[in-house]
Length: 388
Image (tube, rainbow, N blue to C red):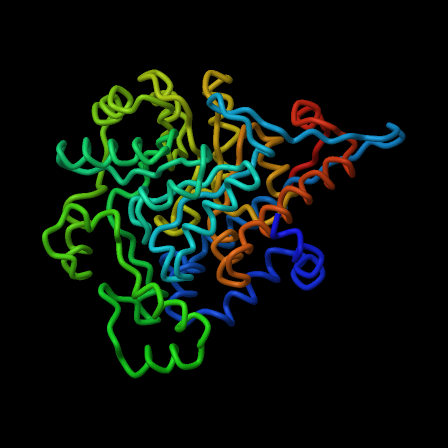
């Protein structure tokens, strides 16, 4: 595997995801960093997401002899190297051109899932060529049925097998930091943008080769590929408030696992199970949508109690270390995902940046399981913790 040639070098120079984030911030324009790193409002939820993990500490056990940690996980009939995957991120090509292709290739090499967004900058048809059988698709639900049926057929034909339905974007959030940085659709060529391009030559070079980021999946449904027109199309025709009847219809249409993403209330999780959905995805959209929400980690135990093991529970929002992943798994998540870290990895290191992020997270998870004195996730959930 080509990544192995760089693994020692990357591990010494960038041993943590924070190191990669710092590198990515230097390598991409301010407008791209503001979009990736930002939240909404005063961004308090971003920090609360992180702080929630620090409240959980473990009591390790020793003298167990050699430990062989097993992180292999089966989910929806597919076996993954670890219970860790790549969460969807929209407009990914703004951070680094062809990022979706690089992450899809990482997923295939390492046997972990990559979830492609409806509003990514590459299409399911082209990404599907790289991803093998590791492809999930995040759906921003179309409001008209012909568009929905067409999009689902395209995704299915491209080889994506797990549908992740976004529930937590009833309307676009304000994302004030992105606005201050000058993000607009289409991107405007201003003196500020020109200066950012000149001062970030590697990003500019790769962007010129690939072209300015476009919502290529959605362009398929418009007669006008002008970015402003396409962005308006997204606002008018995709997303909005779901209802349970729509979710039922999606389950009938999609011949595979359907997961509802953005769940924070136990009653919503209960309803998702009742109507026959295959999984519940606990998330507050990485703190990007509603600054007044509770943290995903706070919500997780209550949802686990309500679901009672009837369907798998997925989790994201704030995962930055393997220890974070271990904490979420301890609280009952069956699988955890991270979005920003994987995009940071590509922005920092290019083609194999996603591999390095996965290596950091999985190695750190395994290391911390040994430190705790457990070999499996089942054993992990029997560990002793303290809170607060």
